[in-house]
Structures are given as C-alpha cells and as structure tokens.
Image 1 (tube, rainbow, N blue to C red):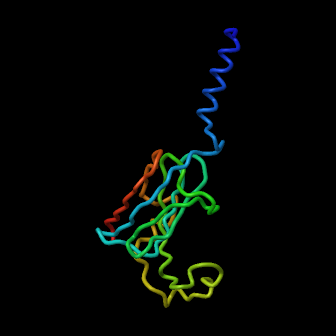
Image 2 (image 1 turned 90 degrees about the horizontal axis):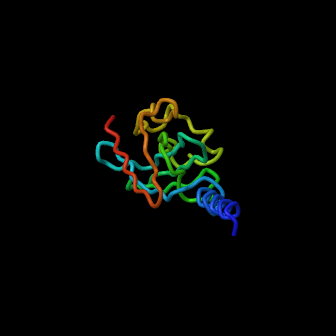
Image 3 (image 1 turned 45 degrees about the vertical axis):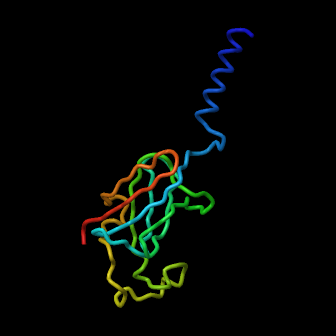
Length: 146
C-alpha cells in the first residue's frame, strides 16, 4: 500500500471512532435520586438540559425519589454526555391530572403547595448542574432549600 492510501485509511478509522456507530450524539444511561434535606421527593419532573447541544432528557421521580432519564422523544434511555442544567418541576401539585390536557382545568389556587422552589423550574435560573459521563451514571441531587 502506498503512504497516501495508509494515511487515508488511518484518517477514516479515526473519524469513524469519533462519530460512533449510531452517528448521533453520545448518550449515557442515567438514573438517580432526588431529595430535599435528605428526604426523597415524589412526583418531581427532572429535566437535564445539555449545556452543549441536544437532546434534552427527563423523568418523573417515584415515591423513593428515584428517576431514570429518557430523551424527550421517549425513544432512547439516557442523557447526552457532558454538563447539564437540571430543571425541576413539581408535577405533584396537579394531583392525578398532571398528564395531558386534563391538567388545564386544575385550579392551582386550591392545589397543594409545591415541594420545591419555583426557581428550579426555570432553565435560566436553576443553580443545579450535573455532569453525565460515559457509561452508566448514578446521580444524587440533594436540595437543601425549603
């Protein structure tokens, strides 16, 4: 083989390794626990907003505060590798009607008090940041504010 052909093959192998088999962004499996002052939070929507690119990933916590992230399209488990702003929304205040259009008829003035501050629900104001690394990530978020 000529030097030019060897160089071209080496370049092709390097590019293929960097792109990966899927050709899309690199995702990692992410599971975690959300707590407030050490106690698990139920029915909190956890959103991971990548600081570099897309897709966004989200999940809703269970009674133990546990969540497993999926991309917004619901087709892939995990989150983009890298740093994320973490947005938290208390969907428990809507009771059993938090899914779909049924939530539009819920009178929030008579609803439950939110478990967490509304400051976490704004991607521009949240102070929670987490890094997703390659492989399987276990992320604990323990809020200390009332």
